[in-house]
Length: 281
Image (cartoon, rainbow, N blue to C red; front, side, top):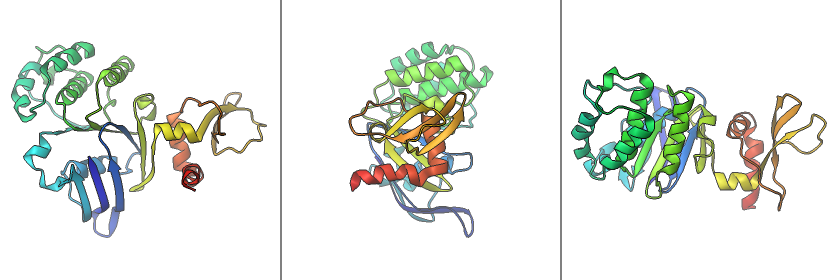
């Protein structure tokens, strides 16, 4: 679906943000794009959608250059931005105005999602709270049935019940014919939702692995301070440590702690990545 090859980009001359960045994203997966603030997540999404152009290299969607912004590409792509403005029209009017741009738009799904999110379709969008407007756009983005869906910090501005509603809607939606990229620094919001973890740091992809592969290679456990096993990464907690350890063959899979894993990748990336390189050997 998305192919990025040797992409380089700089906002300022001689200060590259991306330097020969490579990334492949496939249909049928929900990718969690994680990174610290300023890591380049939004910039990467803007390259994929064709709103920014690389200095060198290429970015393609289904084999077509994203910078060309072909109508057939844009009608099958939706970007949910972190910052947005909505007009003074009702939700229903907004849907009626914009659905012609998306041939696969599912109006019934849209109404169902609005009900789940408790968003009233007869109210003007600009009069809704930020959280309500964000939920409306999430519902609209999913209803487009676009094959490529880019979501930039979709849970920002949502309260705890709304985040739960978001996870419920995402879990109930068929993504088998769609590639979804969710960019966030709020790692815990995407637990149990994503199929693949991609970590961007200082303009580089430093980790790109499927959840199944992570579960096969790593073990997430609470251990005592005097535990003498080899630990890849750990953090102090009350009564011991939260730790990432190499998973022993045949041992039971543990629940993945995405926040712990993200911190481990940022601080001990080479050590953790070695577990996946060993699989190739």
